Length: 580
Image (cartoon, rainbow, N blue to C red):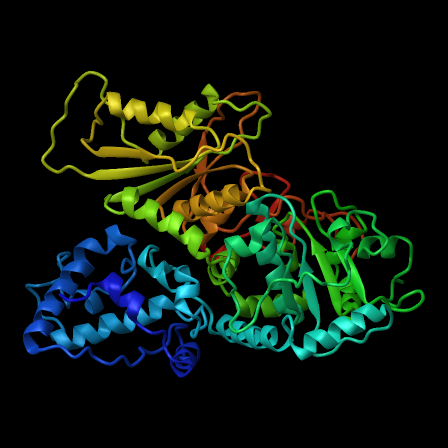
């Protein structure tokens, strides 16, 4: 065949906006109707060859090349039968029809079921449309209403984004300082803060809040944001221009006079939402782990009402605060329409927002193609140790092995026989991410020195071992993002408690990981791990306050879809009650 599936996805132009509109509006399924794709000008003989090769690709190699067809309908990919080799002995669509079906699916995969907008320059951000080559098709449906709101928000970002006339006008009003009225263009400025995992989770949280409040999201470019992520919105930038007039915004913190919490505390904002003196042009929202009871009032209905009067909001956070947005009455109906399945918020928003830049995409694809692509199964193990010493620690190694062996994620070794032969050799690749190389080396040596009882061939790989987290270094962050993405391509994952690195990988993958509990007193916990009830990240520092009764309460018991996290008893996470 002249052109394989991988090359076809790379060369296919994205669907026209009309086709995307049809998919978004199709009843009963967000992916809508199949787009019309022209057949390639092939001879009859070439068509037959293409048809046969495509059938073989669909049945055998697609799973090993990123699983891009794993969730597809067999009747589309391999004929009417159930033959895993492509249904060559079954009645199926004619070669030309099959070619059209596969091409149509290629187009839908490029846009992740309509989640992404068409029309970007592919070469400027290869990961945007090539992710379908490496990632399995998501089992989680996207609501047509979410697609509609994303398209609307893209229009807002383009209209009001940096260097537009609307933005320039808003900046001039901001400089005036007082009594600025809200208009068509209102803004949420995200301040770069904390480690990479935290930053990714807070950008997603800020973006959802921007959608709910019809605000333009602008992100602080500090800590290499532009080096890590492509622009997510068409024909505009989400990067805050360097000449932003509030030059001290990076130094805002708890207790700053400009903060919403401090203004409530000092009664500069009255309980009815009115302001003591002139209304400010901006407010600072301190939602980091150290915020106080006044800052936490952000999550109350009455606070949201007076925040709507402020055209500029500046946000600093290291928390995934999405679960508490679901507890604000005025947003509940909108959130239900956006996410009928409650536990896929980060999964959908993360795949929409976070496309690695070409440099990071090169790190990802080179490693994947070299070490991971050809295995029958991929297991990802993320080891995060919250200890002042570097390790490796025996109790952590014990926990990893207890978890993976007990849950049959890794096969047992046979220490008695030097060789175990089998006629059906299955390969499994294990990707380990950790700041320390000691765990990887000891597990790898164990499986090198002894055969597995099952006869499986196990290979182990660890892309980097930086020893210490250094969130201010450009290449450190690039490697971290690459490893998060590589982890998310695993068929099965084991992640560490409390780790936002693991939360992000889990959310992008869309699969429920095996979560290793945090050790206490340097002792491996029993049980060592459990499968999570939800793919959503945990909100580590939620408020415990009932805004209606104005007294403390357990916010993990107010609604059935917001519950306490598996790894942090006081944290909150979204769950899909239909699966519990």
